[in-house]
Length: 73
Image 1 (cartoon, one colour):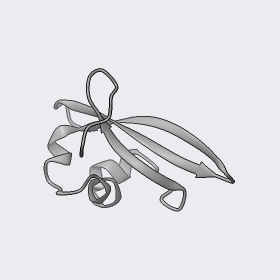
Image 2 (cartoon, one colour):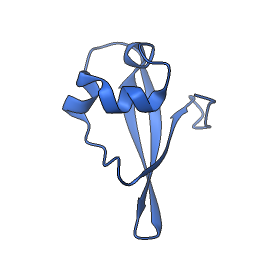
Image 3 (cartoon, one colour):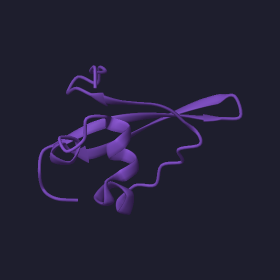
């Protein structure tokens, strides 16, 4: 990924009734290309080449601000 500003994205995955959270770093410039976060995660070649996401198990994806709280994206 490029050396631009980074935002953290929290992914919530379901696994046989249990939920797991992971946080990934995504360049802000990539997210700006898409109107929805999920579209960037699924379609952007730079993200899909470097980050594997099991979309069958993905329950939620949300950008985090610097304090770790969720934003509205």
